[in-house]
Length: 173
Image 1 (cartoon, rainbow, N blue to C red):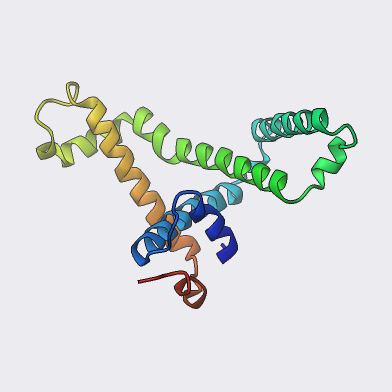
Image 2: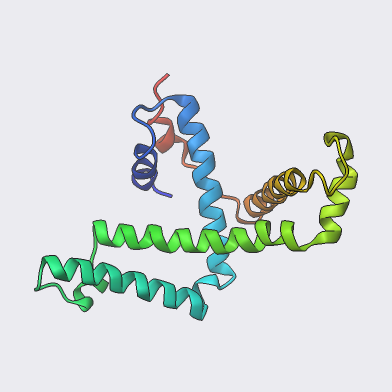
């Protein structure tokens, strides 16, 4: 991720640059980027459902823009840069992130009963009742466990590099 892209994301939620907030947010952005990158590598962006979703989004953008400016065409929007392109990329990444998280975390936590049971057995001391009475809490904890493992594996697999000089300049003690 470039410093410019990071600043765009960071600026949406923070008004000042502090060492702790930049470091924490950089960690979140890295996690987000490796998840999206992995979704791309696994072909989630080539499925028919994904392509249909993106086409519908583009049509919605085009219709909204064309109502305001009749000289804008669908082809010109496809070549567009700036705000529209940024919106489309954010939407695209969000769809990929959702699909990847569903596959690697949410779906597993809900549908893999043997693994959920094993997780409960391994962490039984964290709960006050049996598995049925604590199911919602156990599933939530198991989702956290799955996501932590998934992110750790992605970071090991893709080993994102940080340009410390570029990002260090953002930090004000």
